[in-house]
Length: 398
Image: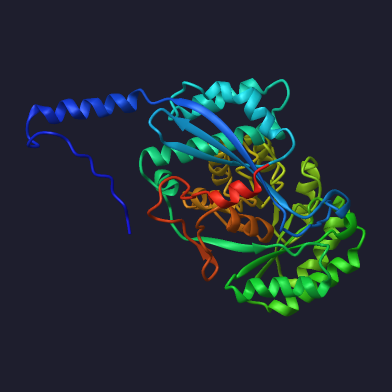
């Protein structure tokens, strides 16, 4: 049921008292400002340890973290920013960026973003500094939509409200039988697109990679789209060779076949294989995506809203991709990308990562659920439509 706010004004509804009260309300909004910015970090231990092509068990442990940014205004309306809990992100927000926001009009998002980017220029035009900016920027957009009492996707001007979603997991530390079982579980849940990892053991287990993809394809049949992700594990010639093998399994895209900084290598791979190349989850700026697109190094780009500078920059990257007639399949961050994807006609699909989904179920009171391979934002909840679970915050905050 949609909730509406009702404003009661004195008088009979036709006199000058209406104008004076309305002016007071407008003045209140004109004087709106940010009065505080705080952060909360949560660590939830009950998430499996994962491995992929370049992430081994030596550097991975069970559990998953999440960072929240709370942007508070003098009107009592609060924006919720969501970010990576990577080392240094919280510190940059608390000691380097918070002061920029205090006393600013929260609707001046582009101005605030530019000031934050300038602040970190000497120590982080990419990496953790952009992750910190991203978390704040997401909070500002959530706040703006809440002020206007609109779901974020409505504020952005939707092209659609139903987005294709794919189930993502298939980690390399799963046995082949467990891998197949996890992929079949997605199919049983109604997903029509799934993604698994390849590049096992830093790309050194080529035969096993091929066997695992063959087993998954055989189990799910030919009607389910199958994407593969090497997480940069292969060298250029190796990726080309492996793609020729994967083509036989009707692979829908080949994600991060080699390191993201080797743009000419990505372009070479793309020119010599028949599987669409997807990349971009480790790119941090619109300038980097411009290079990928200008060099024809990707068929599908994968900006992560938690890394590229937030919603402000994500939208610019999406529009840039549209200008190059390239599709977008944003990386992770389902609950945010769901809103952004609604505004973009060139969306391929958004990602539902199994470990992220496990954390989201704990952190929020309610989250949108995929149905028959698509997902829709809540139509009646302002902003991102997310309410933090106070029990989880109290229990898992660090």
